[in-house]
Image 1: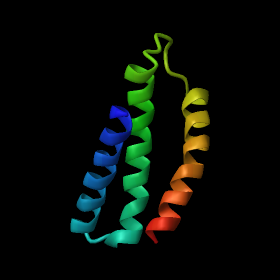
Image 2: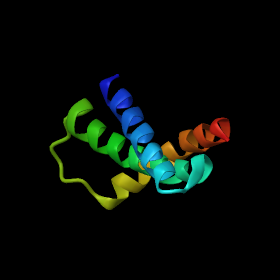
Image 3: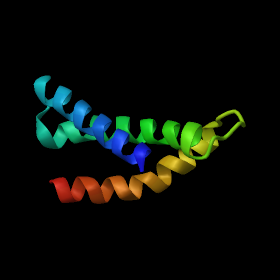
Image 4: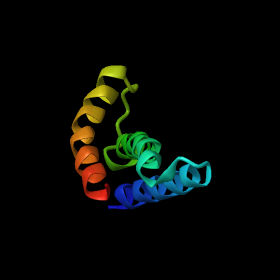
Length: 79
């Protein structure tokens, strides 16, 4: 959906900035994936599910734990 496409755009943009900063494509993926993960969490929370409850650290960490599996596959395919 829209959240995923926008998160992919964040991923790409941060990767490009990281490469301009000299991190290279493999190391640049680390901040790119992290930024996309945080952005996707916020988008899903705010727009996909329209959650009214205050965000909590536990909720964020649970999301990141699950998303880390996808991020590991993403990084593995990229490398």
